[in-house]
Image (tube, rainbow, N blue to C red):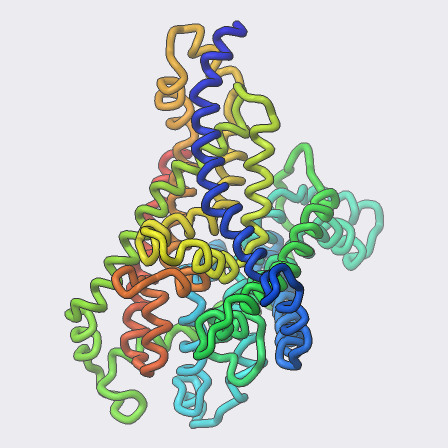
Length: 544
C-alpha cells in the first residue's frame, strides 16, 4: 500500500511544483519587487519614500477620506443587504418577487465599476435621466461623497447580499418557535434567533464591503471629483504626468494595510459563526404587515439600483443626448461596426476565456493537493496561505507590482501577463469553492481506483472531475465574469495591442465618448449574463 500511495504522490508533487512555481514567479517576486522599490532611495535602502508620502497633506487627507467613505458605504451596504436577505428568507413574500430580488441584487457584478460612475453622472447629473424625469431638479452634487457612496453601495451590495443570504439559508428556523414558546417577546426572539447567529456574517459583510470600496479605482476615477483618495493617488504616482515609481510603490504598500487588517479580523471572526447540525424546514409565521413592508422596501432598493443603470440603455440609442431625444440606432451601429472597438471587445473575450480555462486548471490542481489524500497536509497549507495572501492584495497593487517587475521583459504588454494577473488576482474565492467541493467527495475513491488498476490521472478524469463538474463550471464562470469586468490591475499592464474593454473605457473617458462607453458596457453585461445563465442551467441540470 505504501508503494501505491508513493506512486500516486508523484503526479501530485509535479502539480504542486508547477503551481507553486507559478505563484513564486507571478506573486512572490512582484510583491518583493514593489517592497524593494518602496525602500529604495538615493543612497540605497531607505524609508525616505514613506517619509515623503506621510509628510504630504494630500496623502493624509486621501487615506482619511478613503477610510471614512468606505466605512460608511460598508455600513449602509450591510444594512441594505440584510433587508434584502431577510425578505427572501424570513418572510412569506411572493416567491416570484423573492426570485426577482435574488436575481437583480447581483446584476451589478456583471458590469465594471468604472461604468457605475458614468451611469451615476448620466442619471443624477444636471442633464441626467433621473434629473430630467423630476423636472430638471438635481437632488445632490454627484461628485465627491454622494457619488462615491452610491457607487460603492451598488458595487458591494451583491457580495454582502450573497454572504447574508447564504448564511440565513443555514440558520435553523425552528429556534424561532422554541423562543416564542418560552415566552420571549418578538424583539427578543428576533435578536436571539436571527441577529445573534448572523453577527459573524454582519462583520464579514462590512469588512468585505469596506475593503472592496477602499481598494476600488473605477468609481473614484469617474465620480471622485476633487476629493483625494488613495486609489487616485496611487494611479497618479505611477501613471500621472510626473510618475514616481519609488513613492508610488510606497503608496501601494500602505494600501495593503486595511486589507491585511481586514483578513486578520475575518479569520478571527470565523470562530463566531454559528453552525447547526440539522436544518429544519418550518412554515414561517404569517404576518401581512411584515411581508408588505419588507417586500416594498426590498423592491424599492432593487428598483433604485436598477434605475441608475437604465441610462446606459438610453443614451446611445437617442439621436443626441439630451437635446434630441429621438430614438436612433446610428451611434450603436457605428460603434458595433468600428473594427478598433470590436477588436477591443474581442481582446476581452479572449483574455476572459483563457483566464477562465487556465484559472480553472490551476485552481483544480491546487485544490486537489489540499483537499484529496496523497500528500502531506503541509503541501495543502501552502495553497491555503496563498489563497489568504491573494485575498489581501488589491488589484491596483498587483498591477503596479507587475508593471515594475515585468517592464522590459518579453511578456510586457502581452495577453499572457494580463491572463496570469487575472488568475492570481481572483485565485482566492475559486480555490475555496473548489476545495470545499472536493472535500465533500468520498476520500477513498483514489485508493480504491488504484487497487483496481487505474493510474492517478485516470482516477481524476473518470471519477474526480465528473463528480465535481458543477463546481468546476462555477469556478470557470467566476473567472470569466471577473476577467471581463476587472479594471484596477489591467490599466497598468494592458498595452495598445492588448487593450481590453475596461482599459479602453478608461481611455474613452478622457475624450468624453460616453456612447462608446455605454455600448461597450452593454456588451460586457450581455456577455456575462449569457455566461452566468449557461453555467446556472448546467449546474441545475447536473444537480437534479
